Amino acid sequence: MDLKGVRLRCASQSATLIVAAGLLLLVLVMKHELSELRSEMREMRQTLLVHQRRPDFLVQRRLQDRPFGSAQKMLETQSIKAHGDGALIAPIQIASLTQDGTISMPKRTRYVLIEIGCSDRHTLDDELGRRQDGFLIAFEPLLDKYAVLLARGTTRYHGTKADRAVPLAHHHQRGVVLPLAVSASGGVHNFSVGSIAGCSSLRHVNAQAGWGHWCRRQLEWRLVPSITLTAALLLSGSLPVRQIKIDAQGVDFDLIRSTAPALLRERVQSIELETRASDCNPLYEGQAGCDDVVIFMRSIGFANTSRCPSKYWFNKWEYVQCERRLVFDRVADSY
Image 1 (cartoon, rainbow, N blue to C red):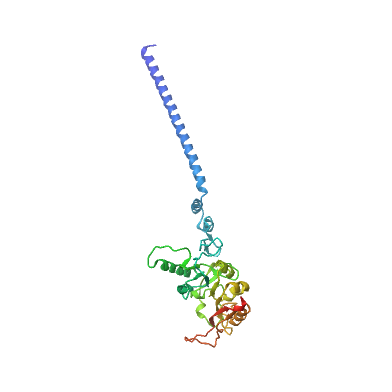
Image 2 (image 1 turned 180 degrees about the vertical axis):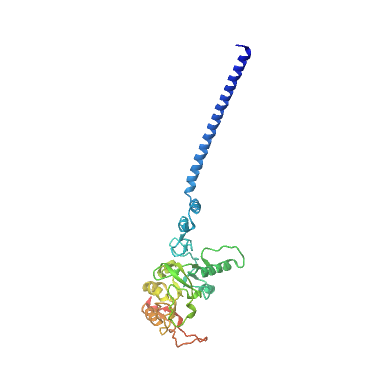
């Protein structure tokens, strides 16, 4: 074999070796990259599993995978419930309690006032200036009126300054307001909201009343949480209750009648109720007449300080006097 042929064969073998080495190197590189890719995929999968346990991830995933009709289930992952009749309900802290489960009050407090049904006028918080030793616990289930009352706290604590916080629930330095109704049984109730806020009630308006036409127009129904009058009294701790003012539109007497008389006599000095003239038709279905209220209150040791209203009375605007606020004071020898 000549020298030229040997050279060609050697060159061919060298080229084959170079190609083989290149291919081997490429395989090694690809294998290394594949190993790194698998490692990254394992890390991503682990991260995904961790995030899947988080509520916000669940909500995002459901928003992508489900129609908007499933919002109720989404909200439940965040402790917010969409009630079956269209009510959106959220748990929220509304007051601060002591270790005994009572409302926290200043140490100098000597007595308590309780106001049930406030709206945004003629409220007891405006009277606390002359009741230096008293503390007010107020209940207002209408959130718009509750917000008005809370806003008073900002003014009382900070004047005209903006963006200032106040202690939870305080609409006064010596008073709190809670977004709760007070009912005979407690629990969540349907609440009829009137276009006139002061007509709102746990009861239906009586269309055949023949008076109180301003209360016939209903704005909407709302679900409201409620507690009993007994529970409201327990929130005040062991302090005497100088006054209970009730403006619950047709259920005032129900709250008293559902509370143990002994508890009322022991704790309460004075009770103010809105009463209906017995010779007028009920403005609210099932509303008791004043005569029955007076008889019952006297039987449990509370005497009225003024007489019942009558449809034969007229006020200065010539409106029939079918309603009147009566004050019942505890009889001394009943305590």
